[in-house]
Length: 115
Image 1: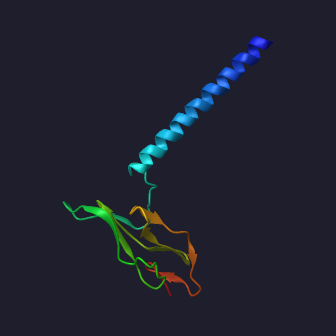
Image 2 (image 1 turned 180 degrees about the vertical axis):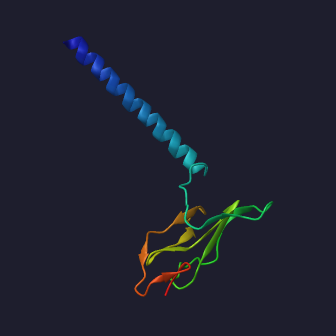
Image 3 (image 1 turned 30 degrees about the vertical axis):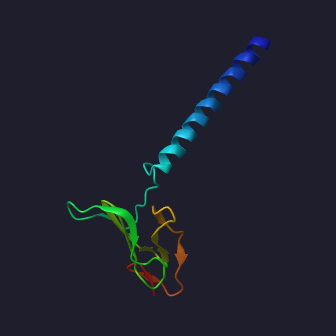
């Protein structure tokens, strides 16, 4: 019985160690920008040959009545409406593209702005 418990503990330690290593790897890759979360709303490729080194935002204050656009890498992202909810893209403090939480527009939402 003691041998079985010892084997079970070894399995748990092995699994936890593997998870820890994977977590550290994911965090280190994220710091390099390789694993940025996917922003899928309003994403379009930039014209052929165009590349944006730094994250730029046409609406850095995230005003609800202004349709913003963010450019980074080979893509551009626009604020979008899903129903009456506005989803805004922005550059975070480390200049990566992020997606805000959904904002409920009182009078509806159209073409990336609250009405």
